[in-house]
Structure formats: C-alpha cells, structure tokens
Length: 238
Ligand code: AMP
Image (tube, rainbow, N blue to C red; front, side, top):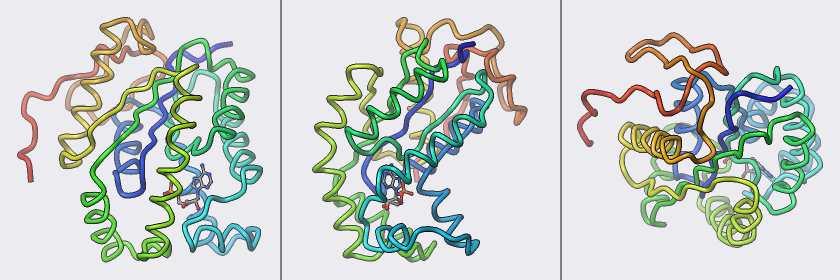
C-alpha cells in the first residue's frame, strides 16, 4: 500500500520557526506531526528514563546519537497507518539520517510521491533575536547562549551535505522564513500550491479540498495541496 500524500519535511536552523510551522501545517493539512526534538523534550519532562547521554547532548546543543533518533522516528512511522500524511520536523539533520530516512520511507511505501523539503532560512541576527525571545518565554534548557551557538554551528556545518543528499530524492523548497509566523504559514502553503500546480511532488494526491475556515481535519489522503484554501485576508504583519 502507498501513502496518498507526499511526506513534508521541515528543516532549518534553530530559531527559524520549524516547530511552529510544522505544527500549523499538520493542523491545516490534516497530517501527523513528528518532531524527535519535541518527543525527547516530552520524555525528559515526564521523567521517563532516557539514556544519560541524550539529556547531556541536548543541554549543550549537540545532536543526539543517530541510533536513538532513528529508532524513535522509525517506531513512530511504523505506528502510522500507510495512508496517514506526515510532517517531519527537525529530522533528518545529517546526511546519514537522510539516508536512513530514505530507506524507512521506501520500506513503508512512502516514496511513491517525492517528499517535499521545506528548507527554512533567516539571517543569523533574526535567529538570535527569536531564540532569545523564546528563551525568555519557554525556558528551554538548550536556549542558552552556548547551546544556541553550538546548534547554529552544527546546522551550518551539516547543511551543505544534507541538502545535497536530500536533493537526490526529495523536492527541496528553500524558503525565506523572515516574515512573521502567520504570513510565513500562508507563504509556505502558497509554495505547496504552486508546486502542486507545476506538477511537483505534491500533484494528484486526491480530490477533496479542506474546507476554508474550517477546523475540521480532512480525511488524510483525500485532498490536493493545490486545493489548499487561500485566505481572503492575511493577518497584518506585526
Ligand atoms: P529541536 O526541537 O528540533 O530543535 O531539537 C532539540 C534538540 O533535540 C537538538 O538540539 C538535538 O539535541 C536533539 N535532536 C532533535 N532532532 C534531532 C536529530 N534529527 N538528530 C539528532 N538530534 C536531534
């Protein structure tokens, strides 16, 4: 069996708004949101036992070992029905993870459609501004100056090889993520529509559009991205 929608993969540097956008896209498009970073934070917050090196790696902004992250993603993917659409958030982050993911998606029949990578980008000063703001609001343990610097550095060092690997089997859309979150969501949805219209990875994925203004989740697998409702009014830029 094959999945009806291409998988969406949201990537980018820390502070660019991956998590916010991935959650909104999942909500708007009726997809499952899978964020290894969030799963790890939830596990730590609930006191579930995790390998000591996971907590330590996260606290200083290092990547968690591949075998732990890959297993986490694989378990979640296997739990999803094959027809359930997917937004991956913050995975893969390395060339090796990208290759592992490709294998997982192929085994699960999720490569019939070329996945779409939303590669979010913003100037470093804007990332720092957002991360400092988030640190004050959310108290994430890894939003301290040293861990932030390390996470940015890791992203920058891994990005070229990760992008090159992904470009071989996904449809990569590089997106300027400087606009405020609401505008950015609409911009991303427009990008998906345009790609669907142009015959990219998101074409011919069903017939039933999601109802405009409705919070009803569509039957995943029965909508086209080309039919994503266009908002009459965009929220004012803040
Ligand atoms: P995020 O919520 O995506 O910013 O991730 C927070 C932290 O979780 C990262 O700084 C890493 O320590 C860990 N993490 C999340 N995703 C991955 C991944 N794909 N590979 C390795 N570590 C990850």
